[in-house]
Length: 504
Image 1 (cartoon, helix red, strand yellow):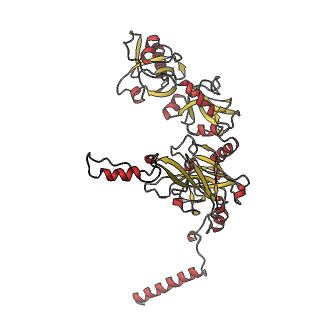
Image 2 (cartoon, rainbow, N blue to C red; image 1 turned 135 degrees about the horizontal axis):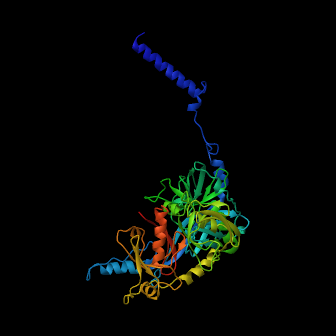
Image 3 (cartoon, rainbow, N blue to C red; image 1 turned 180 degrees about the vertical axis):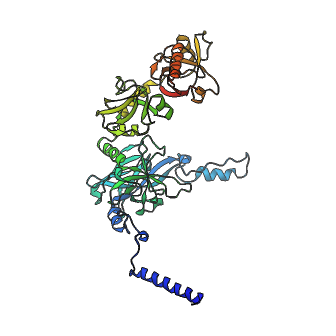
């Protein structure tokens, strides 16, 4: 048999096999069988059809004055005596609207969804309706209803609206459990991108627990379901048709979807929505501590095997734990049964807890784990206390203070904290410790951002009162083989922070 004959026979065999495969007469090996996730159906038409009626378009209008509007054009600056001056004066000063105040209407569009058909409750983003004079809710069948604002929360960017349920037969959706969503799960977004109402897009959960620095409780769901301008406030559904997120933000150099969108998880949003419905405002739990991250250096200084939790840098006077229950230097690793892996976990977990609830807090204090019980205050009350803690931070620039006994350690010059040094550095009367009078350039202390006028209150969780105390503590740490010294520093107004300094 010639080579050409063999080639023709091989071709016939391949074509016959491919035809049999397409007709289903030949079994396909398991390793080439196409698969599809159980909750990723071939079509989402039935699911979308049942949800479209509950998703609404939010239309707002705001009255602004003349050039204060977002779309206002600035008056061109022409050379003095220009022949075009009269033309530009007529165009820019007399165009459109009331000549007296130049006011104009600015409109914007967003999305939302109904969660209570009987009460007419609609959820959206705060930034969709912020500063609006009029809010209208447009339904998928063309009906438009006026909406009133029930409450907003800028920290999570959530807003609750109310429409008259008698004005239209409403369809509602309910919140699902966002904690059950896994990376790779199918999700569907419905909204009003670029004013194109009723738009459905499908994708997956791309990531969880995203921090995009938009607020103190960032815990976003990242998705590649297309989200564009106008989708804000719209729902992100799971495969059961439950809302597991509120579409809020995108990353896009062009302004359009590039497959990186973010949604507020329902676990966070549902509690905020309930409080806004009930009180018209949020009522978050408050622990009353200042915290900072636990770095590897700090963990080593505290005798912790791994860097985790939130380090308490200070306790707020008058706060819930201003009774010694929790102290500066403690590391919170579990709150009310929930692990605190990193600093940003704690504010969110505390805020989600009810005001007045007694909770167990697992802390590490001087290398030993222990559980303390605390009763939470209300976060909104902390603003009143914070306003009373502000002090004068201007440094006195008068005559030099008389010389005091000093010591040089770790690139710092430290001295006694007395009336003269308090006056020189404007240090509050209730701050105690050893004052830092100078920091050597390029020293380990300078690398950590330590400044003259700060006060060392503790070293390795033991208080210091004199320059000799500082020298003794550093010497003791070196004898113990420690590589870093953990310092608690107080600012001129008494705010505390922890810093580790290399001792090599």
